[in-house]
Amino acid sequence: MELNINSPAYYSREYGIDDDIYHLCRQISDYVQEKRYSELIESVGITPVIAPYEVIQAGKFKETKRCEPKYGFAYVSIQIDYIEYTKANKEEKKKLIIKNILDSMKIIKKRGKIDFIQFEKDIKMFCLEQGIDL
Image (cartoon, rainbow, N blue to C red; front, side, top):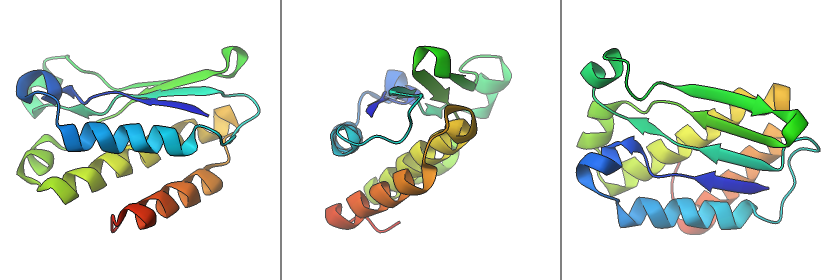
C-alpha cells in the first residue's frame, strides 16, 4: 500500500519540520509499501492536524475524511491535541503521530474494505522493531 504521511498541518508551518517525526513517517510508509490491506484502496494520504483550538474554531485546518474506492485512494486529515503535542517529548510525539495514523486508517476501513487488524499488527510490529513503546 502506498501510504503518504504528510507533515502536520499548521504545526509544521509554525515550527518547521521535525526531522525525527519526518523520518518516522517515512519509515512507516516504507514498512507498509509492499503490503496489501485492501483490494479497493491502493493509496492513502494522511495529514495530521496540529493547531490551536482558536485556529480550528476559526474554520481553518478542518478535518477531512475521504475514501474513494472507485478511484483507489483515500485521504484523511484528523486532529491531534495541540497542547498535548506541544508539551510532549520526542517519544510522546511519535506515539501521538502513530495513534493518528491508526485512527485515520480506522476511519476509512469500512468503506475502503481495509484489513485494519493486519495494518494495526504491522504498525505494532514496526514499533516493536524500532523500540517505540505504544
